[in-house]
Length: 637
Image (cartoon, rainbow, N blue to C red; front, side, top):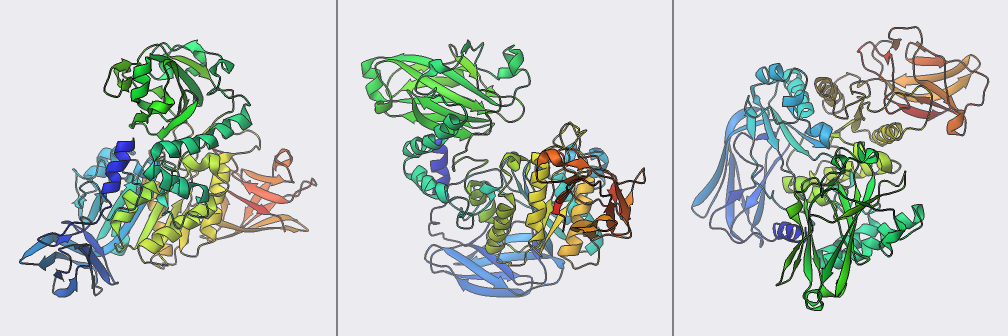
């Protein structure tokens, strides 16, 4: 892991003087450039060199700075093309051909935005009918970096929408692009930059995220200088989290846990323990290894292979590493001061939130390599112990690829530079359900961060509210998913250039990755037409207020097309009246009436109204555009 991050840091170094100018890789063949606003083009050249940038009949000459970077501002152009883009200087040039002028959308988030077209409903038909030379696609490779990168670590390239490029592309993003192409009659460029399982924090630049990352900023800087020292400090945070919930300290005395022999260094679902058959949570793993006095003096490298999802690793009671990733091989350097002659104990708290958990294997991947000496195999001889029920979601370090501070922004957003955009679509939140209270503020920070980077203070944002997923709910109760959706609603409501896209009726109760991305794309496009194109096309019903009247409680909605209607009945389902506590919440009798819903006052204390407050709410309220209102909680005035 340490070597991996070190290599990423080098990518952010100054560009050496080049004999010929280059275009930033985002300006490749088949690119779409944003219409009707100045077009920024950028790249590298020899320091101080004059570079002439040409697009069609327009050209500008600029000078590369001392680092070899240049940027040219070309005048705005209407939709059209194709054109050739060229950067010339020092007797050489770099070119990109088949360039179109149109609208460019950035699509980002976690796995539901990442979900590929080839897995959607009727994917074969959608791919066959999706080819369009006027829709251009580009996908950013998953990467992290401790510092913002000026260019992508891997090769990226635009491609027209073809049977070859469509199958692996983001389905929601493509269906939105297809709808906008049909309605706006201009070329559409779709940039897809997503990473399944990620929280929102890694997508925000560190300066903008400062209010949420105060305790992490210094720790991240320390990690760049001294990974072990940073792990030692973060270990204090992790162990405090454990002690607050459990009280004991197994890294100091592992006998406080109840241990069983581990059948193999593999996923725990395969061990035959009924308690682990469908277990998502925290499991401790323990292995003891004997070193001679001479070996202990040399130091060693601990390799654990891939651990799914996250590990907090201790050696002789000292926190030496914490990593996250379903494909990241753990490798921790152990200086001699952490080792001793005789028995050394390796203790790992493995946290899994979904799917298989534990060691991925093979057993040969686990070892302790003494520096300059023997490599001791660790594939066998492990014990395991379950954490108490409810001890889940341990803290994550700022260098965590999926939950850390700005690491994904640095490698997957920052390299885009100030590329011209029409707007951004954001579909994320599942990984923040357990950390939902500050999500609205983080969503505001994300929008501010990207608007700053793309030099677009009013950049439109489309935010997809979480789809339904989870067990049915026969009675009112607390719901982390509902709380996250409420945070999404609040975050969007604060921003006049953002729109909320409701998806709670488009999911699948038993599948966190629903295959119906067509309707998500259609609703995204509708929201885009409203917030980015200024079309008189409401995004959908949105709860505005709840007030007590002599005839009962009235909830007023904005954005309603026609009237609100209750499908398959005369009553609207999933409305609740609540007092101060969760226990006071009860289902309410609600009837739609134009753009309001009337709720019967049941005579019990009620200070707030909740709607669709469940992981998987069952609802039947829509407007005449067949759009549902999203979940909400409102005080009764």
